[in-house]
Amino acid sequence: MYPTDVEVRAQLSRILASKNFEAGKRSRKFLSYVVEETLAGRSARIKALSIAVEVLGRGDDFDAQNDPIVRMEARRLRLTLERYYLLSGQTEPVLIEIPKGAYVPVFQYRSGPSGDVVSEELASSPSEASVAQPESPVFGFYRGAKVWLLSQLQVGTTSRLVAPFLAVGLVLLPSVFVWRVLNPEWVAAETNLDKAKELSEVPTVMVIPLSDMGVEQSKLLAWGLTEAVITRLSRFKELAVMGRETSWRTATQDGVEAAVPKFNPDYIIDGSVLAYGPRTRITVRLLKARTGSVLWSEFYDVDLQHSDPLSIQENVADAVSATIAQPYGIVYRFERRRAVSSRPGASAGYKCLLEFYAYRSVLSQRLHQESRRCLEELTRVSTEHATAWAMLAYLYLDEYRFRYNPTEGGTAALERATSSARRAVQLEPDNARAQQVLMTALFFRHETEAALAIGERAVQHNPNDTELLAEYGTRLAAGRDWKEGEKFIKKALALNPGHSGYYYAMLALTAAMQEDYERAYRQISQADLNAFPLFHAIAAGIYGRLGKKEQAKEALANLLRLRPDFDKNVVKEMSMRGIRKIDQAEMASNLRKAGMTLPPEAAALADLWDGGVLRK
Image (cartoon, rainbow, N blue to C red; front, side, top):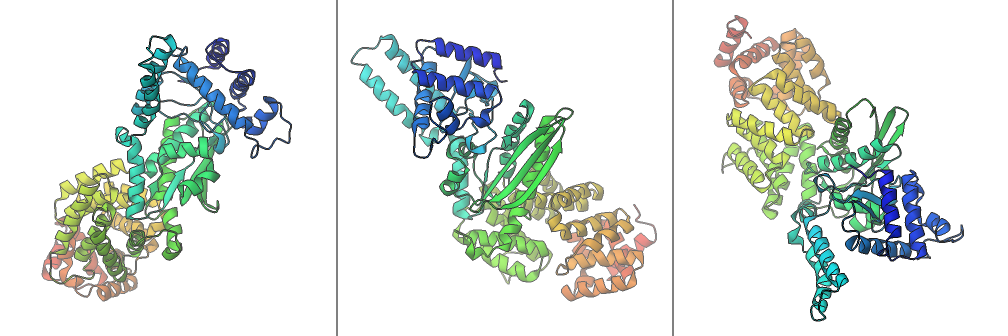
């Protein structure tokens, strides 16, 4: 909850009337001006120029760059307010504060719900918006100690001998505040960013708080949506997302222009929430940080009067994060188009990440070998790189299931895949790519229920990671329920149409296994994975079932060109992938209709299907 206008004005009156508010005439006028402008909904006008002219009596030619008077007066007022609340204002319910680096005041109750502190007014200009943040436990300790020390000095109960020690305490307590080990959440955000940059040099993204241009409800939506986007983006290991404190500081203190060279992000996400009539338009953009060029933008029209704001916030944050951050999203495609060598600070780790996704987009044997070589070297050098271990596990898994570039001697590929996947999960239990590959490795070990349980938990935690959604959907379809698995693949396609080839191939298979062959034909016609043997196997079965002989013949030729022994190992190939017996029988029947000569075991299954013994 936020203080009402009446409560804020009452608090302003108490401050101005108090003898402990030791401020001069200009500071009092400064405070009254910024409070009344904010309550009137004109916070966007609160700039250095307007304060200089309307409060300090300067002319319209005032130069804020060369004349620091407004900054000095703001600093003086900020300190005077802090002293007031530390002394006689300790019990007053409403806080009026001027955030450091800003001129727009923040109004809040002394103790908000769950300790959260939310601004009454978010400025429409991102560079001068002010939003107070939840107070950390350490700062709370410092504030409380400071209040006690000042109160002792104020009431005069402290002896001359003790007073110097209290003064020293006031100086040393801020050092306690910045003692990082006492604030693990703050440290975690910086540590995660440092770790990501050190290990893989993945692109860094800064989310600028969305500006609001409307009514109270839209202001809350702008604030909540900013938080939700940061949270969603942080789940993707392919990006390093700057923490919420850095994002808010950029808006309230540094300003975007100053933040770019200071924090050096690669990309910036910004946007606005604009209320017009009964509708509200949310606009979000992705910009190249150094140039300010817009790489992507989208708007979402919503109805705040008749819809749940929380649902709107969640849905928009999901859509934005998936579009921008998922493995084949906007950032990946932009980075892929650039030469890795031209990217400042690009490392072998980031090069490996790009090569891995390039391979996964086409599933070619040549790219598999290049990517495996890169990741094996990376994990040898950076042994704690969880995402690299997860990607390497996938390449070992593909060595096993696709017979890509088999390694002579050593541990079996499936065992190497499982071991690498477990290593990735041990390093980062919440890493989506690690959970995804461990699920898949266990599935190929025929530990189906354990695999699907891991996948279900991973999807709950990362509901918009399209790579994970498609993999889980595929395993769920083959191992338990084609229709249920299909839902996850469809969601992946909706969120990530740029990677449609794989999705359409899998949707063609799920449609075929539900005996909807006309739909399966439409889906397979939209897939394009010519370097992937199993794509041709799926296509051949669909064409064979529909009696499209020429297309079936061509698909079989492509399959046997890429995998000359596939027809001799049909049952083994299907069993390896956890496909149930009844589905194996239908697939074998379809391949025979396509013109494939089946070995005895596969032919027996096809006979059972065609004879009606194994029918769904």
